[in-house]
Length: 190
Image (cartoon, rainbow, N blue to C red; front, side):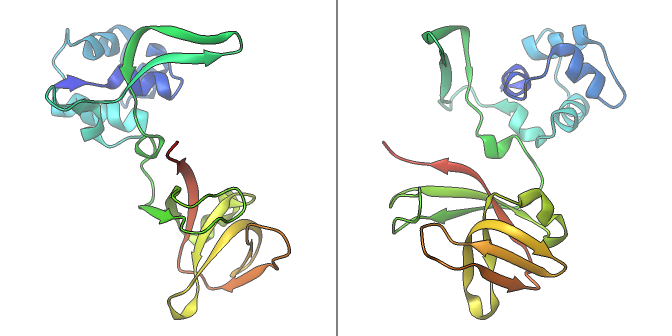
């Protein structure tokens, strides 16, 4: 098994010292470095500590050597593409956060900036956390098995205001929504 601690740490913008300090109890950057490179055994206990510090599921820290994993090989900078010092595993943005269930919305008809064939990955939130989703695209269940989709523009008590994508559509007001799913990632084939 190969561990992905370094890949996840870098994608979260953390240094060895940041990750070491985030562990409970804190550890040293040298210990984290040894775990990343395989110089120290990555036990279940260490997996749990590191995963909690990175806010990911522990199983995301390891992968099989047999499974091909997409690699990040370059970064597109202002001056053009720049090669990385060494390739690293590409970890889905949806895997890097662990709160709320994931769901996918298939786009079958153009809506605003979304095209047919797009997939919108959403993460479920409790309605009490709606303030975190203001000015973001959301999917909200309505009564009768229907949904509202669009930009969350308002929350007043148990009422949510959702503005559908596209021009000329009026705000949809949803009362007592059981959950809100916030758009987290757009997947589009080229």
